[in-house]
Image (cartoon, rainbow, N blue to C red; front, side):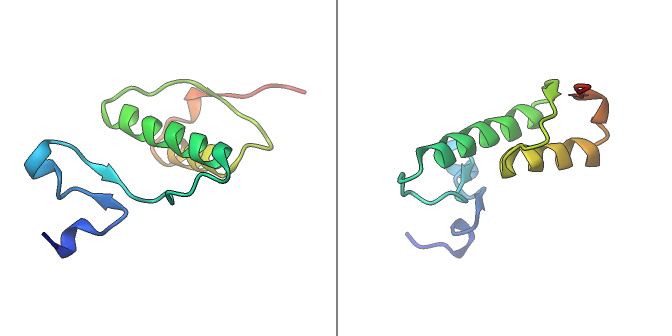
Length: 88
């Protein structure tokens, strides 16, 4: 059944029927398995944060786009103290 509310990056439509949410931001193509793995880790991070689990993470200057996004989220939410900085 088509419902225009289902076709967004974050699908909350299934929550009312199955008590689940769907992330639809990553393509289904697995030519670059590293990208898929990073997307899985990032999605898990969002779910953990939504449950109040704020892990301490390590800062990496050359972090990929997902890690950079996590840094932005931490700073925006006031969790900068949960990012471990390493002195060189």
